Amino acid sequence: MKLTIAAIRSGTDPIGKLPHAAFHRWLEDPIYCQKCDAAYNLVVPWDDAVSKFFEDQSRPLIMLLRKAVQLGHGNNHRVSHFETSGVVVRSITSAN
Image (cartoon, rainbow, N blue to C red; front, side):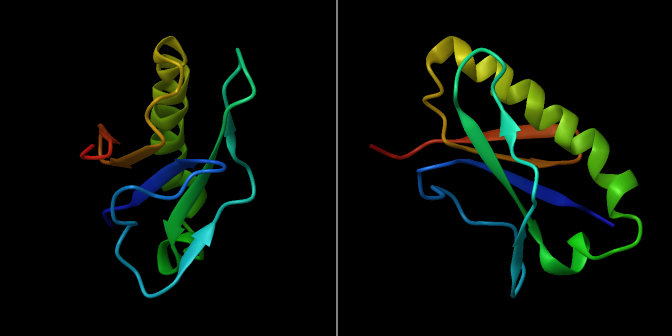
């Protein structure tokens, strides 16, 4: 199963497309920056979020997103949308 998780900074709109699904689920536990008050909400396709293997499959991806958020503190959290699938974290920025 190819799991995709998006982390979107709270207070902003998603810049890129959300993971493909008819319905999305916002996970209860956001990712917080340890050095400031930035918080990122996690979005997952509904079917993947309700899978019995979701906890095990999502753990490494959430760890990658946490690392990306921590590294984003250095540039004042200008990136408001991260997305991961596999071992790659994409930073989605606006075209402006």
